[in-house]
Image (cartoon, rainbow, N blue to C red; front, side, top):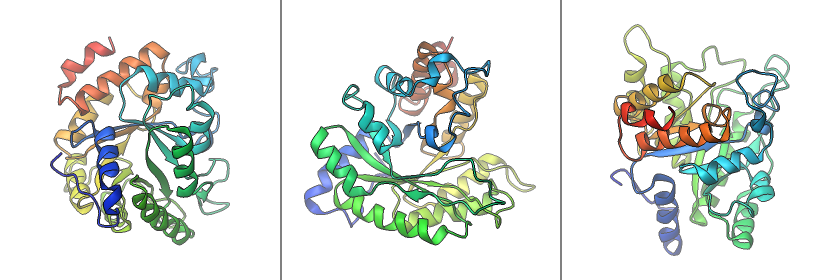
Length: 303
């Protein structure tokens, strides 16, 4: 792994565990496929309504996440700590990322500035990891940069990252500009600042929305600047709403090979499929991310 560092706040006796966790997530590459499954709180039932023709009945049951993670090919499954607790004993072979804070999508920004409240702490993750022997490789923290409550979320993130490193765990930050002060949450200049802030907080990996193109830069050129601004923190892009699978894979390939990102954090483009199709999608994504394959080589997994 060319761009792999062990931060100085990882104790000497935890360095091997930290390195092992990084290798687990990246499969000994510079890249990462995070299977994002935190939407049961974040989006409530919006992503799981079987009345939507694009969403199969299987997706309603939370166990669908874990069936996909168990039979598919992913770096890790990221979801709230207690959802891992509910299903982890049945799906012990899956590497996990435990989300520490969450909010629903019910309260609009016009009513209240977004605040992702801490629900658990690193000590809770570490206790469950030791007691259950589950492979929990990292913690995940959301920050809504630009919210009136950004100071609370940044403080929680900074403390959680430091604590995670003390236990040999990686820290992944979901860095989303959001609030009344934010006019454009995919502005490249703003996202470069967000990625740099995640690096300053100590994040090992930062998840952002892909930027839009500007008059002077394409989306991929903007991504290059964001990746540079993030320094030695790996940048992964969110997968967004479900889209045409081939187009999704083309975008992913370009983000990695032209935008210089480290991979993707994708949920809906995977779990809003039948189990068989979802498993195939994880293999298509993984062969691009971990094997350096072309989109042409990945397509047979989904056709």
